[in-house]
Length: 229
Image (tube, rainbow, N blue to C red; front, side, top):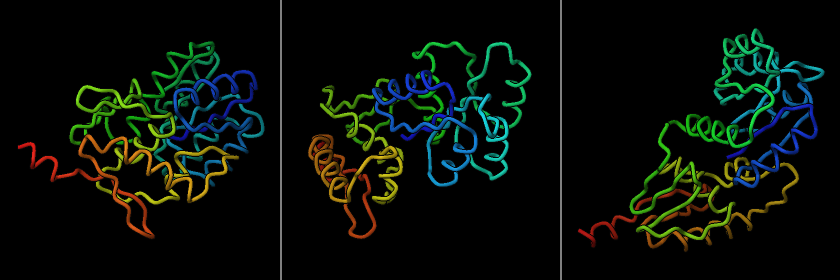
């Protein structure tokens, strides 16, 4: 999952960025509304964390433009505790949630998890694919009662594939959702990540199919299911 933080307080933005990265999210940050507009028009994100008091272009104007373009990206507003009218206006303009400053990072991360699940098309916290279970809240993967030893990037890659189960996912889509600005990720690197993840989830009966020129698709290994029945 890839998150854009639009926040002009450098210390707060850095704290949010580091915290979310440690939780396995690809996170980019901008410090004004004009940069937020540019980033949102050039890149696909899974969530926008939006401060209303941005310079150059206000957070409300960023949100207004985003919804006018029929974008359905989940938006979490950050706002000063006493700006009740702005909070109400932000929600009316299409924000999905808001947090008043100051706030706890643990609560923000809980809301981020809820909004990214909603943006992925459902509210389930555990996604099942054959014998594989992916806990979106704890960000762990379990097969037959055993937790798989996956890196943060491998977990994020599996999340991309499992939330699009049965559909083709291109390398370009993977890079868009997996990598931050400045990451130098080659086509070969994506193949390496896929190879490592494929080997680790094989015991679950889930398979990552490769279609040359198109991308990857997470499919159920029906032969494993049949032999178990």
